[in-house]
Length: 132
Image (cartoon, rainbow, N blue to C red; front, side, top):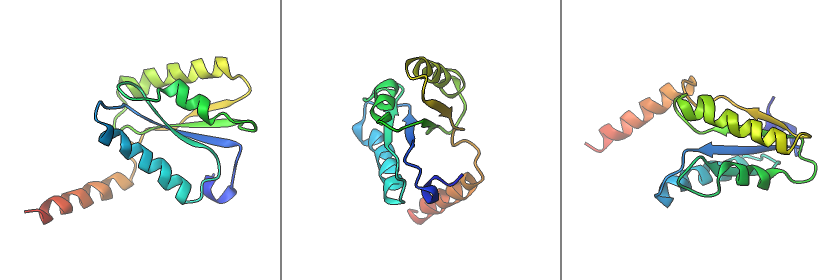
């Protein structure tokens, strides 16, 4: 399903990151959210943080749940499936399902070993070499 081409305004997106005490680190996720909007995503897009930053995940999720939203895609902006991805985020999903039974909460796969990661790593290595 290509959310950008369908113009699905009944599906919201929640980007989830660990969170940092450094505001600059948290700003990366905000730029990803802005990029989705620029790319044409029509539904609400929000960012939530597991800890150390605001808004937390439940608060960010609630901000997406405008009238007419039937589905919330929860995307873990994590590279590995540690405890946060494998357990903590599922707990948040269950809590939200109980609070909003009329909404479908979909926990998407984390970034992990997506095939494009190899290209990203190669690009970053080349950028590092260019600095030498």
